[in-house]
Length: 78
Image (cartoon, rainbow, N blue to C red; front, top):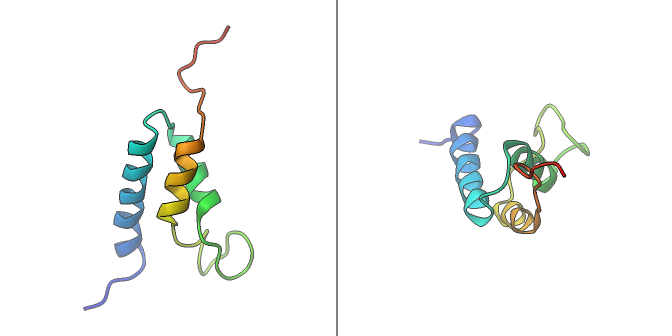
């Protein structure tokens, strides 16, 4: 039996998001989405493409980016 596509991608991505949130609980949904796009391994044509989308997630790069991201969500305006 072999698994591919969203059957594998969804749980892997959910796991990476859990690691990102553990590393930086202040991340917003928008932060997580942006970091996943920015740290994906770009395959095929540069940028998003029909075959690979944004590319596979990179857990190491995504968690490292989460650790260094400063979010201002929930910060009251001066």
